[in-house]
Length: 170
Image (cartoon, rainbow, N blue to C red):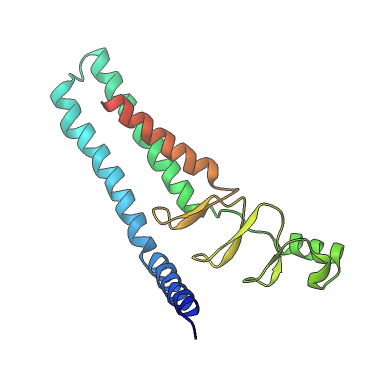
């Protein structure tokens, strides 16, 4: 057994360990992310804004309402990106692809070696979720989910609202 095969074996063990670690700690990341967003929003509305704005004026009231609007959009898009499945090839799609190319692997253009099924274009296998994901961007531990076809919009909106809130705050 050469040095190269030992290095590959060690890397595959580390890869499996990292995948299991991310899968197990994912809910903790989601809880931490939600706690951070809610705590920062709560502190902004109850501590920082009352010190800097008078709610009896139009500007103070608009700052409060704007902060609540930002917080609502941030929390909504975060929850939706966590709860929405990223999109996987359905059994109907897989059956159709098998019928087009024959039931064997020879007739199908792309084949997932881990799922042992055909996969459509732009689909990739996630080692953490253990499934193929349509238009997969990446697996995000902060949402404990893959960012794919169905939840990309919510993930992008979450990041955009978060960025805008930071821009407005400073």
